[in-house]
Length: 197
Image (tube, rainbow, N blue to C red; front, top):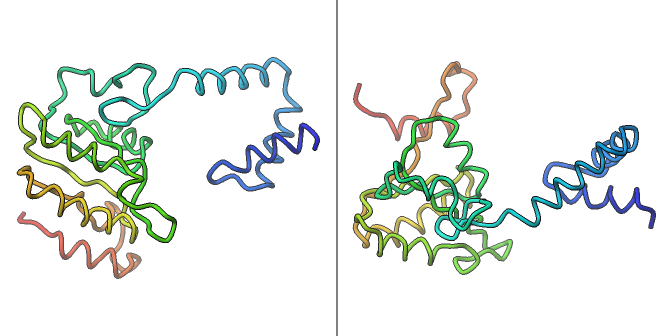
């Protein structure tokens, strides 16, 4: 197997990158300077060596605790549960959430062999039980897929007896959209989640 085939194969394993895109990326790297390619290789090496999951929340970090968990200005009594670490960044970019996070590492998907033991649900429950100050609210921010919904229902059943308020991210019509172009499921979610004006 040639080096080109090896790199193409490795790149095509990444999500959203098929064999054709991987080949284009390899050709782009080969057309560029050797220094650019070596700099990229060093950056990947640094990523593999220095980044690890935060020991508290599971977000990616260079330290034992991530920047969010080590920030004393964050509210530890409000916890947002997400499926994957990259979703922490999506919520952080809004600038609206000042609590802490917990990364599950996926979502329940029995058909794919992902059950509760494959996710960090035990760590989540322990974190809620032992939190000081007491956990006031757990926001379940799983995706709106079938698996994400199943995960949220499962978590709610486990978390509610522990005492905190358990909430779910709102679902509904995106800002700036016309009702005639919105699918029925989204409209149904918006109706179910309506609130006082």
